Length: 107
Image (cartoon, rainbow, N blue to C red; front, side, top):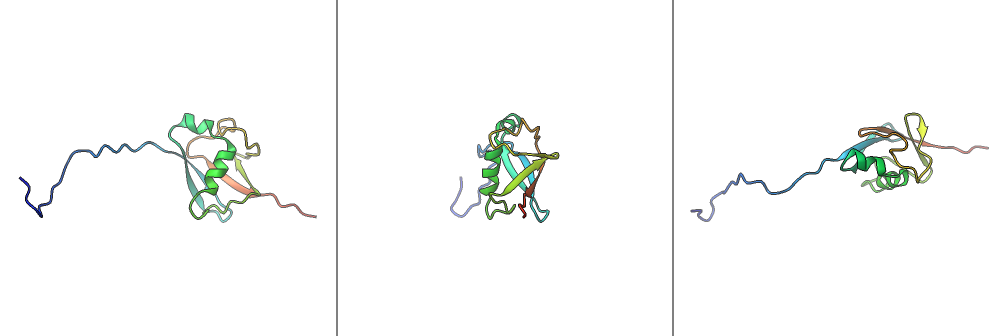
């Protein structure tokens, strides 16, 4: 019997299941590596479009990657320039390091 004020410790699981998260890292202009949670599986990661990745980066609290509309993402020396292509089409894998670059138009 438990009396008022007693501390009860239960060893029963709470039923919370933590789903695996597939992450990539984005290197910001100042060299900061910002982790981005994208999917629950590698297959899901492959189906995400470049535009969805950009949107996810922009929605990070405080925009730590400092991404703007003029930002281009690169991976493995390739520009991720087609917003409708999937990350799988570009060969991205979990824990990939994506770099941000800005194209400067001069005159």
